[in-house]
Length: 57
Image (tube, rainbow, N blue to C red; front, side, top):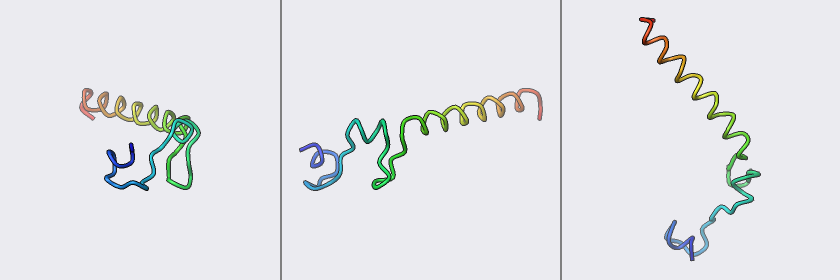
């Protein structure tokens, strides 16, 4: 039923908790640990950008 609401198709894939936590290579879902690591890199890059902008660089 959730697949019908989310994707308008009865047989559509809906990611479960295990898929989101551990990843699912079949559906190109990275594990949470990888997404957290990528988020930390992105936050550091944003911080560096803001500091460079503030310092005129």
